[in-house]
Figure 1: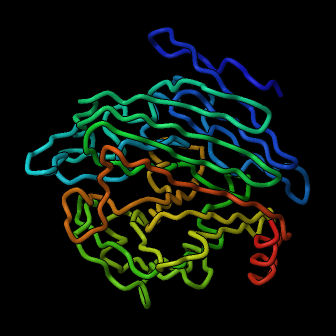
Figure 2 (figure 1 turned 180 degrees about the horizontal axis):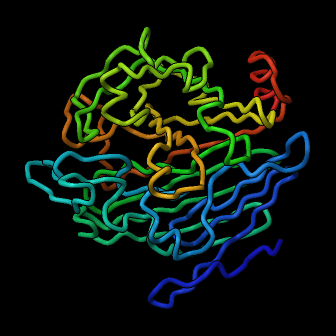
Length: 351
């Protein structure tokens, strides 16, 4: 495959390019549109397995309501009422999900062209300057996203600075189906998360402002389980989201953020990140948004949603003079099909 190729043009004529990164086993294709992870292939028992859902061209991604593969910002997840108080003044940001703000607004980071600063066989460095007032956010924000592959690992690093206080909660939004087959339900994957609690939400999926202990609830993934096995149709929170679309609060000092395994392909993935929380989305909206694409699980390391409106939540304001950094590391292994979870964990630890 070519290292760089034209991926299409937007309606205004701007060209979108795809950049191929290659490790010893892993291959990734990333767009300069939104830093989108359009393809991720990893070694399986019977050749490579495509493990993220993707779309055919640039126009499809620009029109995509499901945020497939994008770099999310300035603020991932939701902000209640598309407004918040910051240092004594009210700030209004764009409302793009009813009255609320979702994933950075109308265009956010995911529908903007990023500047390619560096590219090589195993690295792609993208830069975006978000000007003061964009989507309503204060401050000029400089953000750099670095993708790097090494062996069977993909690393994403966010670095950012600002010249005025601004909420900042970047994350990544790929949909994973490690089976590599749309006919295999994403809910058949085994998921483990070192979860301490979860954030219950309103009927608009806005956090209510407190943490509920996960033990004994459908959100307890401390022991590996499929979403189908944990799902409880009578649970009020799951009814509100039409399934899983909730922020899981991770245990302090967690060694990893999530582990995922497909018994169908034998491929496993571990996500490492220093983020305090992980948004779990079951992809149920894809049935309507992209019929025939299948489902994937979104596992989004992040800060707490709506933190600018919730003083009890950890602070998510980036201030001048502070250099922001967040790492998200995806580690892959192929322990084989229908393996015991202990074998899966051992393979991921060696990856």
